Image 1 (cartoon, rainbow over the protein chains, first blue to last red):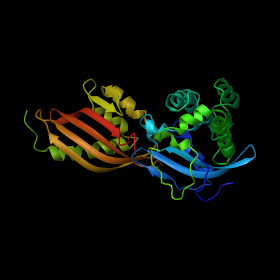
Image 2 (tube, rainbow over the protein chains, first blue to last red):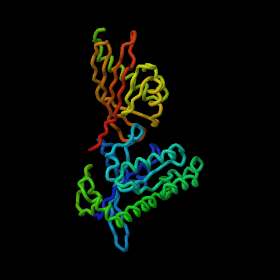
Image 3 (cartoon, each protein chain N blue to C red):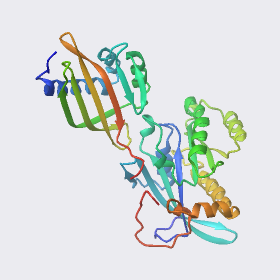
Image 4 (cartoon, chains in turn purple, brown):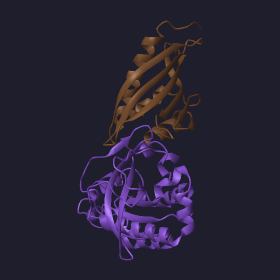
Length: 215
Length: 130
């Protein structure tokens, strides 16, 4: 499903968040087909990888270039800087099914995302990660489902080891984002206006796109 | 009290000893001996802490298993109370994370034949814009 050239219709920036040690990096590693080629911007502590996918919408095909942003572990020391959240269009919120504290922190993460994202009601997919470790599981499925239901979030149990639901989680998030873009002209206009919000614009396919933090 | 002419050696020696203890999880709790129970201050990523107990709570709450570091520079100055001001520029790496630059500043206050850490300020070198 991925294509290798740099032409695309949409550039979409997704963030992977959650407590340190929940498996964010291995989640993204698995999703990008085990390619460990990341671009690390040390000055802002951001690690990101990219993948281009084909998305079907109303019988049309869109080429979507995903930028998947990961932290560089600084959340061990501090809260994340605003540079990390800037212009994010969707969030993968992970907790570790074998670590109850990481589940209890999900509430705080949701507040963080509401504070920093473009929308008051950001698109989030909640993932209970490391579901292959059944014998070490400390958060049962019903409890996590109930929580997700209260916050009106899709909930999936994922594993980077088996690959379970990894692609699915990103597909669901992408569905939410594309639906929002299609239905909310205001949102699309908002996102498309201004230099810092160009990432949502339908971009001209260009060769040799270079990352720059301000766009 | 006079300026301590050994300030540079004291600075470098202290930094080496401090990080040796810090970076070994088994020895990290002994750092408590370097801080005063009441009069030591720490600013850790903007969080203000006072006293050895609070400072050690903070250090013990850090979640990495393994930390390694490279110290790029240790710049020290003598202080007029006989203490030493130390500024460290370095890079640290926790577990499998990418390395982060950091800065740490210490003020050592004389105490008998030795010193204690009166001030300790730590920041990762991460910016809001690239």
